[in-house]
Image 1: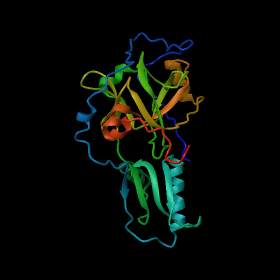
Image 2: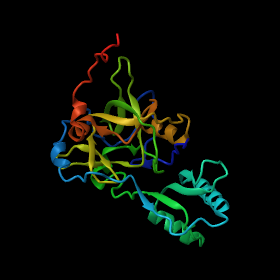
Image 3: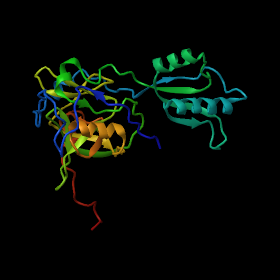
Image 4: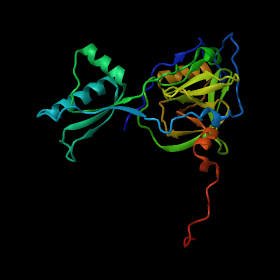
Length: 283
């Protein structure tokens, strides 16, 4: 299973440690966006392409050589050392089969630059998968003054868990929180995947941005859904630094969330509550 890597937080403003659950002291005033009306997602999605490829593909251009296994193992090891391996596929069912495909956590441009820097040539018999480039910043210029830190990893996500989690993600005093809907669910600090960024929309609301497509994924304050679970090490230095800036809350991984209202526009059937009656013949 791929490990989630926590890289340094993007510091928006220097804050010292706070007391209890209060954010660190800071002479600046930070905004709160606890709730927000949903934008017109139908209009925002009107020109959206029917399908968006999660990865780019580089097909093999040569047959497997005699040393295909050694070459595949070498490149898997190189990517593991860099922390950029998502997975690999074998050419056969035997564990000793050579590797025929490799999924990376790099864009094609990053991969080619890495090869050039090391004077390497990628084996042409391997099918390579790359991440789509990020076209939006992690925090836009317009949103910089809105948050104390932007809590997201810099390592691309790749494959992730597919269970659906839901809650409200909101902004309070420059810190991003989440809270589930079950009775007794506590407020927690939210932590995002690399593909989610922060911006301000045309109406002045803080919004989560899909950094791959540039689309608005949600307004902070909306009910959202995300894939998970996304376990985090609460004792990781970056998580500790996050809590020092925003208060001694547990930090919850919320992945790349989307507003429920946005999902309802894309998948209208999700708006209807499921039929709880059992199938015929089942008591």
